Amino acid sequence: DGGITQSPKYLFRKEGQNVTLSCEQNLNHDAMYWYRQDPGQGLRLIYYSQIVNDFQKGDIAEGYSVSREKKESFPLTVTSAQKNPTAFYLCASSIAGPGKRTEAFFGQGTRLTVV
Amino acid sequence: KNQVEQSPQSLIILEGKNCTLQCNYTVSPFSNLRWYKQDTGRGPVSLTIMTFSENTKSNGRYTATLDADTKQSSLHITASQLSDSASYICVVSGMDSNYQLIWGAGTKLIIKP
Image (cartoon, rainbow over all chains, first blue to last red; front, side):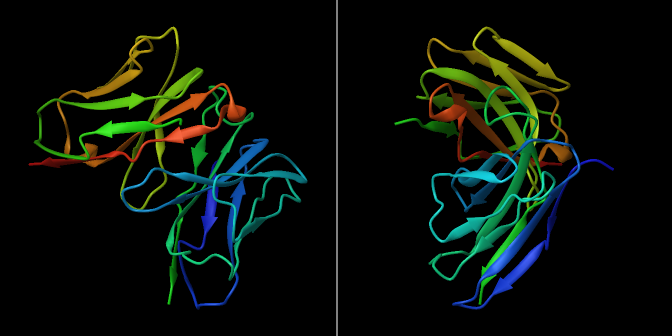
């Protein structure tokens, strides 16, 4: 079954704690992305990677970190520096770089809640 | 500033009826425009991708139109079904900023039996 798998589906974080969201794809896509979705707002880009061992900050990278050690995996760490982390996080991948009429495929999302 | 505005914010229609969702954008220079369907609590799924030269594109009961001169797009849904209840998001890609996608906030569509 090809696709993008995000885990966990729900995640609860205590204040001051770092948490890592997993994103794995078996589509052989070069590009991967992390977005944040808040109610009533469009998706906002956190980080993206176009190739292994390279990634770029998006519009709201502060308080987040990523790694791209393998083509299939692009984990996102939400650090304690992120002041308002409660949101729905979406991972996506595409064959080529962002936007060039290449279809982006999304995972099912992780809902992170600070308790 | 590159922006994508969608209207209405929400819409309720009866099953079997048609509806049209609107998208206005200020992204320039323009590369392509996409419509996504997002079910509650799920990731978005692509419906159409349109470039400058494409005025109309259909995907089953979904038909998207694009007027690149006025920077407007619409998504028309024909003979709505209960499964069409979802958020519909317009996304525009510009040629600068490394082709980043600019996301609209979406229109929440509810189909009532």
